[in-house]
Image 1 (cartoon, rainbow, N blue to C red):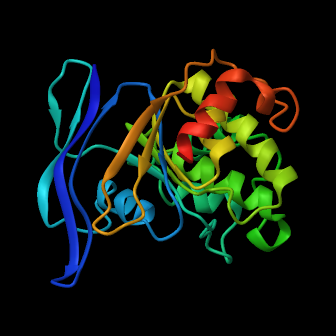
Image 2 (cartoon, rainbow, N blue to C red; image 1 turned 180 degrees about the vertical axis):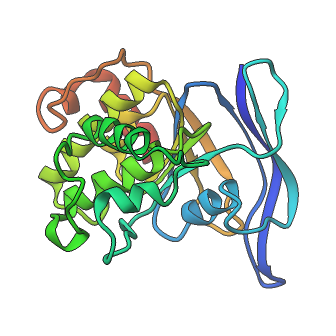
Length: 249
């Protein structure tokens, strides 16, 4: 069952710059799909278009509920490349700011915030400010902010690219556990091949040449949960080796 359909969309900034053209992609409910490609191929632009942060030139994007009916105003959770937290607000206030129709009952609000922070392993961080957090902790808050709105679709735009690899690996493992628990339809943009294979059910490979097109779609037929040791046993999995070869073919 589809959660969303990207139907022949095109995006042009000018007559001389068409980013992508006639892209079509179906995303299944509860599926994790990776948009994979080198820097500059249009991954972030595509994520912004899906989230309605930028207009597209042609085509359509439709979202569906469990009864296959079109959802006109879907709730999108978005994790940007940088945390983009308000530095003068506490962690709790950063989350409360985006909550849908926040209750006037402070206890209800606090309970939802505490529940979401526990999900991203930040219990007790409610009253901290962003400048009191490490880079990894800030990105966990960013993830919590995207989750607390109870999104129909979760978008992650290279969310770990600015972190050191040790921290990024820990966050990938944590994200995989969250996606398994919540069963959220997810689209992840990345240029990291192991990240794509570890998190995705399918990998949509984009071309580098403009206008960008879909080069191929690879199915990651590795059972979940996947081996947490990305640079140990996981990378030597025969399926991982095959997909890595296909990605760079």
